[in-house]
Length: 140
Image (cartoon, rainbow, N blue to C red; front, top):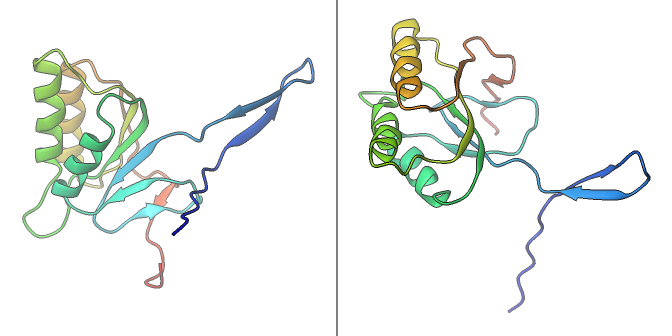
């Protein structure tokens, strides 16, 4: 049985005319309902457990962007994911993440996440109200 795996790549041309091929950014989105509406490719985790699993799959690799929502449905929140990030930094093995974007509509939760992750040296930005994240149709 043959399996074909397609890996998308970005092709750019340098000023000197050379062709440069880059891999697309590694992005993880942890949100129970929303997705990227701008078509960007991302691994989506709908629960905190799935978010932790996604982080662990990227352990030892650069994760360009991590997008976090606070409330993940029912009693689930992003805090187990934040605790994994904090523990890794405490153990002096922080995850290699370019930017953590917090796009939660929960102002208190957003502020606490920003504070917690900045304390451990992660590059964190508020992305509340971001036009990049939204609700897709149920067919998605």
